[in-house]
Length: 367
Image (cartoon, rainbow, N blue to C red):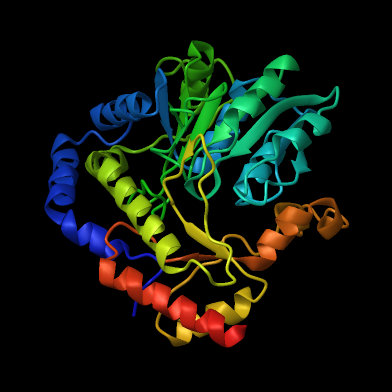
């Protein structure tokens, strides 16, 4: 059996390092906002080419606190993608604003900048651009559109730590960027966690207060915040993994290149990299109108797959936007056709070949 992802392999290889990091935290008895969090914040800010990292409880909290910190208020509109995990839009609701969905580029699955420009109204306050599957969005065009209209930009880089666009790291664009350390991410914790990255001192100061009950210093509370702090244990474990991230991302790119070589010439749309992006393949996502049949055939062959995401965000019951297929045709088609193949760093060359062979055989039978 070849799983779609196998964290046991990652943790097995790092066990001694992870245990040593956990013991260091246990021995210190510093569990909240201690040296491990501070070190991880500095290390990720450096990797992502920005000044500040602020560790928080989850990727969702990173989005919520970043939206608040850039000044999004109830009644504002925030432009975001119609095809992503629901948090990219639900976080907008959580600050009292209204998500305005736009369709995606069918090759990268990210926001179409031309549609972003058309969606701006006098009530628009910000744009949330998602770097889906590890391929950065067209952040140069999106930030140019936003700056010309006085809008804030938040980059949802939860799936793209270590990717770049035009040589600039994912996470360095816009007013703030948000990371998730959900365990299956390319940089995943052994639990939950998130981070806000920003070059703006005012945004960093606000997020630091908001994550700790609106407190700039102990027992003084200047605004309404809540408890959203990345804990020391997760930070220590993430620091271990961060040391390996460049090699892991390189291996993901090797696997993606091999898939493209082995799967060429069959009726299957393969994951692509559009210059000037450097994709890190958090997912290697292919698409076919016969997606569900392909998933079944691969399961029968012992190959794990995942569908990210089977429902466009506007079609989710909590939003229930009408005529989604017509309003967001690229997102609707992607939701019906995408499937992600195994693409994790510990995957062996033999397993990559086996997956590709199984995919070719299944597609030929389904043709």
